[in-house]
Amino acid sequence: MYDVMSPKAEEFISHEEILETLKYAFENKSNEKLITEIIEKAKQKKGLTHREASVLLECDIEEKNKEIFALAEQIKKDIYGNRIVMFAPLYLSNYCVNGCVYCPYHHQNKHIPRKKLTQEEIKKEVIALQDMGHKRLALESGEDPVNNPIEYILECIDTIYSIKHKNGAIRRVNVNIAATTVENYKKLKDAGIGTYILFQETYNKETYEELHPTGPKHNYAYHTEAMDRAMDGGIDDVGLGVLFGLNLYRYDFAGILMHAEHLEAYKGVGPHTISVPRLRRADDIDPDKFDNGIDDETFEKIVACLRIAVPYTGMIISTRESVACREKALRAGISQVSGGSKTSVGGYAEPEPEDAKSEQFDVSDTRTLDEVVNWLIKLGYIPSFCTACYREGRTGDRFMSLAKTGQIGNCCQPNALMTLMEYLEDYASEDTKKAGIELIKKEINNIPSDKVKQIVIDNLEKIAKGSRDFRL
Ligand code: SAM
Image (cartoon, rainbow, N blue to C red; front, top):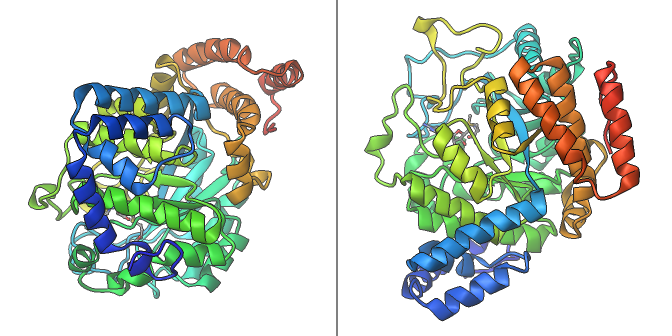
């Protein structure tokens, strides 16, 4: 039975409710009156239910689809302005005891080189990431209680935060590791992590169990209830995601929104972010062998409908996607992008040798961080290296209530400009610096308060003279 307030995975993600939702969406895909009503409701920027959003996703009226995309773009502008948060993944270890059939780190893969970074290697990787200009990382690791126990992850986090190289610093470490216990989530919280990210892969229990035939990840309930445990452990900011391509996208679209509704209802705060990864080619993985691949157009529609359904949840796109696809997705609602990413264990400090490649999957966008920043600036976006909210304790419901009252905009624009200025001073190419400074001059005028504007002007001057780490 469907119950948004239930602690049980199979009740807050009800298979029957999803099937009924899909039926309702299909029956109403050309219902112009209903679709218009849902679009009108969405304009209030208070979000939509999984049923309403599923109708928009299914909508086949061309005019209405144009309205959906326009609304997603408008909501994104209203809430996030033109700021785009930057990050990079850092793979710690690819030792893994699971049997995930879509991931080359699966236990049965005997030929992929298994690697685990030592603390010395982490220092080198982090210095390389700092020298690119990154301030925010997403840590990635396989699941292996012997090779990658929680103590190892905690030690890595400590090492990462401790490295201060030139003007560089990693100021926010997000963590994407397997579902774990409340006790371990408390330890991650105490280590000062930002967001705890865990992709559901698919919300369909039967498919989930087939895709994860062996290992602890096989347990659907334990995996699906992980975010509740993370919140019980004190982690306010959690990041959801499904791996599109594994299962019917409509099913997982409804599922992820039901998960968001559950967190909001049961824990009082919805997901901080939603990621939209798509299955990629990898070592012994051929994405064409999976039947549920989605084309770019469908992908873009998913992004737009999610943006409308959960306006205050950040949305993340990785370098799995092509430049052209990322550009469209940015318009449709994405607020965070990675740049200059490596999906191998090691590889930032020195390229991996050809005969010992440990990549998790092929990236599509292979540009450097500077090229990505330059591209964003020229598209009119402000690449932001801001990590202020989390460092000022604006997480969870405190972040959400600020965001919902529009207050967050008063700090985000200044913080984005000041952190971009740091990037331009320390790491940018000539061309990026020139374009970035012009953008900053223009964007300063969009700070509503004269007092804040003056503070930012003063701080930008100080940054140009060598001071760092200003935030509001
Ligand atoms: N091991 C952790 C877990 O089980 O949740 C998380 C880390 S894993 C390195 C990060 C994510 O990569 C997975 O959750 C999955 O969605 C994604 N992934 C795995 N194989 C992939 C592939 N072939 N293409 C694209 N993404 C993939």
